[in-house]
Every structure is written in structure tokens, then in C-alpha cells.
Length: 116
Length: 114
Image 1 (cartoon, each protein chain N blue to C red):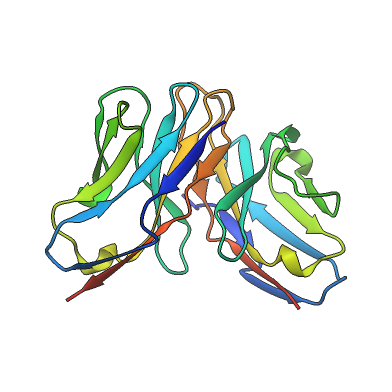
Image 2: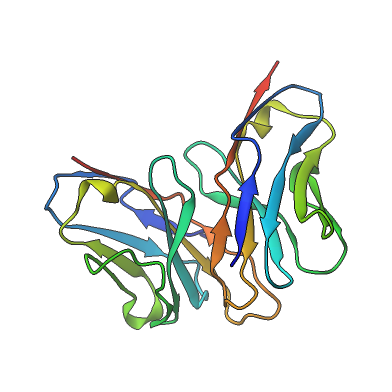
């Protein structure tokens, strides 16, 4: 069974440009999460999808970030326009449907975003 | 409010010696606690989890952690370090009033020397 995949693995863009990160969850996982780790900081939650709906987007830093999950399969995270402080590693995770019992979140390898 | 504190940013151990990674948490409710590991260029992998069952939790690769409510701690241990244990380790709390939002500690980088 394929794990969570993320594309690209690394992206280098200039300040002001747009970047789109993609996450493919494990097949059948309704829950999809985005996290990020900026340099020297903890990994922080960004948002949570249940199928195609945003369950919790309390961690989205500002309106330059737009996450979508059309059809409840893969998800994209767009940063427009990118700023220097957006540099970091963006992780995607997925988990099976339901909340009880609590299922572990399976993480992808991350996308390293560098904004110059 | 909840928070997670990993008391050591770096730990260096010799191969074959015990490993101790310390984690304290604060939580208003009964927490779910986890340890994740990230090897270089890999995704985060769950080592073990505590969800209010047994306080001593056994995980993969010989790791275990003990939940101590009185000390608000969830330290990770392994009796004998292996070279392959070199990685970054994260103590994680799941908020009890949240569906699945995880809160991460700052991470502990483990170096294993021959």
C-alpha cells in the first residue's frame, strides 16, 4: 500500500511568486491534514479536511494560503504571493475515517519550500 | 491551553547504552500523547501512543514510554541504542477537544556514536 506522497519534494521560488504543493493521502483516508515547520520552530498544524470539507483551518497563517481538496482525494496548498517567512517544510498527513478510536496520522516526507 | 516541552534539543548516546528523551506536557483535559520519529529525508513515523489505557506504552523498535500524570511527563526510553536510532524525535499531544489536530514539541535530535 502506498503511503502519503507529496510533490514536489523541494521548491525554490522568489518572493512574490506563487507555489502549489500537492498531497496524495493513503487511499480510503477521509482525513487529511497539513502541517508546517519553519526554521527553528515546532511543527505547526495548518488545517484539517474531512473528505472535501474543511473541518478545522485554525492554523492557517493568513489569506495568502489557500488549501483545497476537490473530490475528497488529493489536496493542494497554494501560497500566493510567497513571502520569505513562508520558507520551511510542509507536511501532509492522513488518517482513516472516524475519530473513535483515534487513528494515527500517517505523514508524508514533506515539501521543503525555500523563498528567496 | 495545551503545550508540549521537550527538555533536550540534542541527545548524544553511545551505541548499546540507554536512551532517555524527556517530554512534559500541560493539558486541561485527559490528553492523548504520542512519540513520532523522523529519519533524514523520511516522513514522520509513529513510535507509540498513549490513549488512557496502560500507562506504560510499548512501541516499535524497542522504544517505550511511561505516562505519569502526577509529573505531567511522557518520557521515551530504549534500553540499548542502535546506530539506526539516529533521528529526530517529537513528543506530540492531541487536544482532547479537537478531532485530530496534533501539537508538537520542538524535537530532540539523537546522535548515536559507535
